[in-house]
Image 1: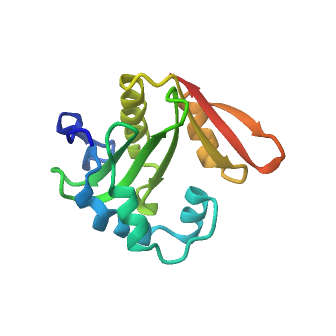
Image 2: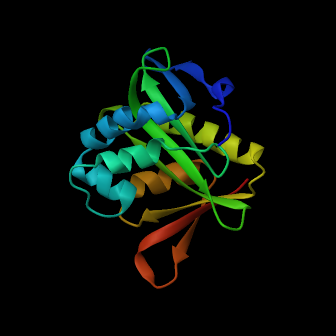
Length: 175
């Protein structure tokens, strides 16, 4: 496991005046990630994981907090200055077996939608993927998720069909 990249942490003042911290996830975040998952509406969990998830497990939260900073990277957004505030957003990538691309996902606390934190998280995630030498970032999005599709287009992702699957699309961005 690579060393924790503390130098990537920074604070932002949002347009509504609140301050957030964006920082790499760490193993101690399992509880905060569990709280984030548990606080999401059923629809938000469905759109993020593309299946219905009831009460999120400690195992899932632990998995999300177990980052090696080489083959995977994750950033969290904490509400309030400092690294130990409540986690209200998460964006992550996993390097694909080809070593040249990555699969990403993002989730935002329902109460924090439309605040700009998703864009902040994705900016840092894209920057980290480029710094890692990755050439392409991809994700699968449900076709019934127009908010994510608009967001992805705004970030420069191309939208492509998934052969044989009318329920989902691939979003792809050259880095």
